[in-house]
Image (tube, rainbow over all chains, first blue to last red; front, side, top):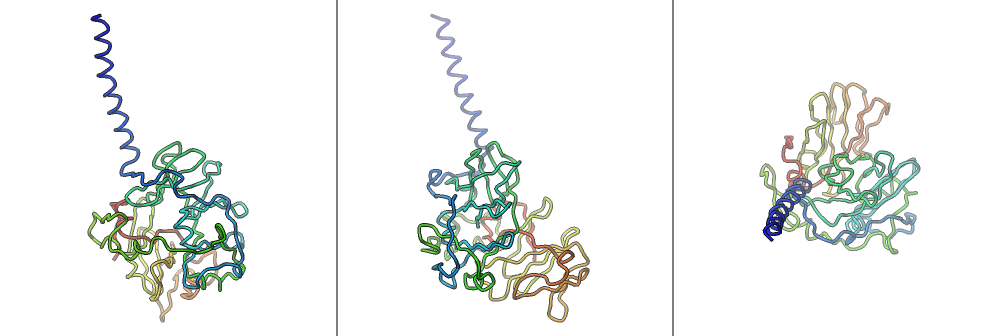
Length: 100
Length: 223
């Protein structure tokens, strides 16, 4: 009986020590990281679709992030980038993520 | 713009849903690592410590200007929309940071618009207002030239170039790279001349002071 109590006692001591170590490590890794939304709450664009400049419905004074790779130009409106945060794309051998 | 290829592996990035000092943290679907854009590296996960590879490709400008320069451009369309509502309008108009965050470094106001960049291990920032019609800086062994037209609005990208030569000076109203003789064209925001020896475009951040300084506290403020 005395033996069992000792084991539980050790367990209680060991467990809090383990918890403290894990949280210290998390703090070290994440610094001031704050989870605001669940992951996936903002849907990234992973299979981008495009239209021509003539078909695009954008106001002239709206801002875009433009990119030219291997002679091909692509534009991403800042409002769509705000909504999706990241657009994953590739042109030729250049694989890029559009973020602003 | 960032590369998606690290150690030969193609990554797919998305928002982690979290922020660090009010700036975006991405996660990749392949390794679940966390990538903090203002720190420029993975801060946790298998890729921890890997630098985000910036591609000096993207430029922000008004759609009418981009379309004029690149009439054959393709335009991202999501669910039949190319533009849409600006969900951050009130944030950009406010004098406070996201969720009322304020700058701890009071050298500039919380929402002062800046251009920030890294050279070697040192980070630098300069208020947009000092860049109207161009400014050159001698930093270590490098000349840095930054340009914003006097009429540039907040979202318009700062044009940024580096030169290892004798300097970039204003002569007869025009910015010139002394060593190469390349001249800066303020309409196109590029250096004209022998492109091999002209100053090279480099990437930095147009952002707000609080975003940058909270993530890069030892930043040297220029001017």
